[in-house]
Length: 181
Image (cartoon, rainbow, N blue to C red; front, side):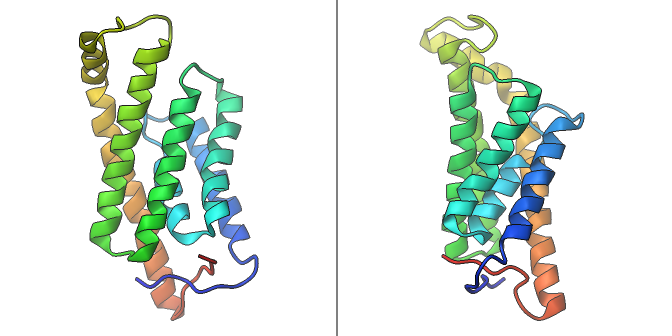
């Protein structure tokens, strides 16, 4: 898969489409941690100009959290999404399937580690876990089922986005997205 070349404003339709998809996916009923957001953050980080690659996932999560409801671990969830978008910067250097899979796994793991640390640290829905290493461990163990779901969903959604992009690029004979590095 080759990366797109530079041109003015051709990324905006994709950016808006990715934001809309991420927001709608979070608002529709879904299993916990099974949304498009991480895949969109990683794909956007790989394909959009750097500024937009951060704006798209952040605006998506801020807008959907405003509708769903804000929570105690916002800094951890929002930060994880931004870090996943930044992983896309690493993918853009060599967007090969192995690197994309590794980045997806890393993004899911960062989200799991950071958000559950946040639940333990700030309490989430009250003081759920004691502020001890044992409490932190309990928090992570309780979240493992959600982690498995997120890993699988992130891999499927990420693979679908990148595969669709590669297919469209091959079909059209040129990259379908133009981005500045």
